[in-house]
Structures are given as structure tokens and as C-alpha cells.
Length: 382
Image 1: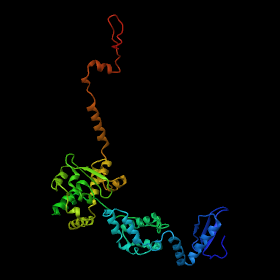
Image 2 (image 1 turned 90 degrees about the horizontal axis):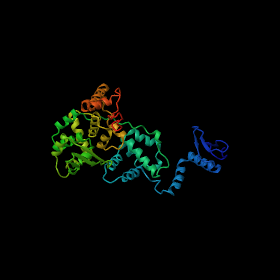
Image 3 (image 1 turned 180 degrees about the vertical axis):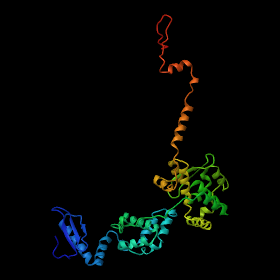
Image 4 (image 1 turned 30 degrees about the vertical axis):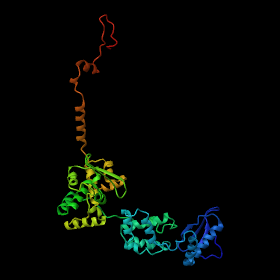
């Protein structure tokens, strides 16, 4: 069913006698639902699709006129404004906001910043994703979702199924041998103590660098702090090795006065330089968290304790950290032997009880009731 005066790019039809109206692209044979059963409304939408195919620029201006009545900035809003609004949605000075601002300076995203949001084509967005890194893929998804949530986009520019899969580089834990080599090479006492605490506590670099003396409970041998990333409370007990490091640090104020003032990226760069000088590859400051989680798993620490120490709220996150750990299953024969020995040690010795008691507990010995001299039975004794 087509109006006689309509162009032939699309064909209007209805599925079923009382069904929904559809249009079909005669070139690609793609059918699209108009989501209406009203004939007049369907014909208006059909005409709009035909006009859009005939003169896209004019159709865009007409569409912007409609959208402008609701959102005056819709026609001029660019990706740069989306990035700035998304960053402003996070606390000023927070690490998350800093990372968003850095992502906005990505070369792959820079080509989109001046592009109007509503005039961005899917191929342009896909080209930016493919030319960038994992960070480009992650943050462009967030920017698009943020614009969708605010109603700045009527629908996704690039559908979820069309986004390239995020493929992270393989990550690993730092080994004890590598850790000791870094300590032996490090001449700065504050930085050496920082690496040692990262090894003992498994904390994020920013959390460890900003530790204060008041975070230490010497009586209970505990360090507790709120994670900068999630504000979640994290606490962990420390042993003699960690205590020796803590005793060497300031007893008031910041434990690391210099490193606490340095940006996380600068601390990461300094650590990378140490690793490069020693020929250590594939290791970052975050590798200390992987190492702690793997050691905790190998030691048999319950997962809930390891999660509390690392500050993770999700079991899946902790399993990802400890994916490289090898869990040794104990010998079942040894476990059964140890259990039998434990039961035998806990069982009371028969020599601790009178002989009469032992006889009464024997099911093969018939119990004889006590009797009085006259032959009557003593019910109390029985």
C-alpha cells in the first residue's frame, strides 16, 4: 500500500489485516517497523523517510527544528561538551575525573571533539575506536552512554553489538625475585619502603602512598584505610617484616611525604624506569596487587578475607586478580589419617572410668538389677 505521489525508495505495507505498518527499502530489502497501526500516522512517517532519502540535509534541518524546540543546544552540542559534562559529574580532584580528562586528550578521540553529536555517523565513531587503544574503546562507550542517559542522543550511534571487543593486554604478578632486585637497585629510602609496603599490603599505589601514621593500630597490629577509588574501608594485619618497614617511616603525619604529593602517573613512570633498568618486563605497580592475591590463595587464605584486604566488593574481581595462582590440593589419604588420629586422641580412655561402668556400657553384658535382702528389687538402683 503506497501513496501514489510518493517516491519509490521505500514501500509501505501492513503485516496482517490489523497489524503494524512497515516500510521496506527497495534497494537493500531491509524492513523497518513504524510501530503504529494508524494509517494516517504511518503515511506521515513514510513520507518523512522518503524526504530524508531524497534530501538528507533538508531533512536534518527540519529535524533539528523539532528537536530545538525541546533542547536549544542540540544542534550545536559537540563531543567536547559531552566529555566536559561527564568529567564534571565526578568530584573535582578525584582520580576518576583526572583519568576522564586524560582520556579526552586521546588522539583518537580528538578528531571527534569538534564534531556535532547528532551529526556523528557510526563509521566515524568506529574509525576512532579502531585507531585507538583499549582506553579509547572504554571511554567512548562511556561518553555515548552518558549522552544517551541525558537524552542528548535519541538512540546509540554505534549499537552495542557493533563495538569492537575490549581486549586487555595480559597482566601478571611481580615475582619475589623481581621485587628483591628492584629493592636492591633502589637508593631512595622512601621509595624503597613504598615498594616494600606494596608487597606486604597489596594495596593500590595511591592508597599506599597516601597512608598516614594514624592509619596504623600498633596494639592490634592492623592498618586500616579508605580506598581512594571506591571509598570502601580496607583493613589488614601486618607481620614482623611489615612492622620493621613501618617503624622506619615517620611516626606522625604522612608515611611518604614526597610520594603522597606526586601524581599516580609519575609514580608509575618512576617504577617503569626501575624495571627497564633491570630488564624486567610486563610489570607495573598494580602487579603488587596481583602478587598479594596469588600469595593469599596459595597460602589457603579464605577468599572473603582476601577481598576485605584488597578492598574488592566483587568476588569476580578477586578471582581475576588471583587467576595465575596454583592451588595445591592436599592428599586425601593424609587427611583421612590425620582425622583418624585426631579422633583417637580426643576419645576418652577406658581406664578413666570404673570397671562397673565399663561393664554396663558393654551391650553384650546383661545388666542385673539390684535387690534387697528380702528379694525385692531396688528400683532406684535399677
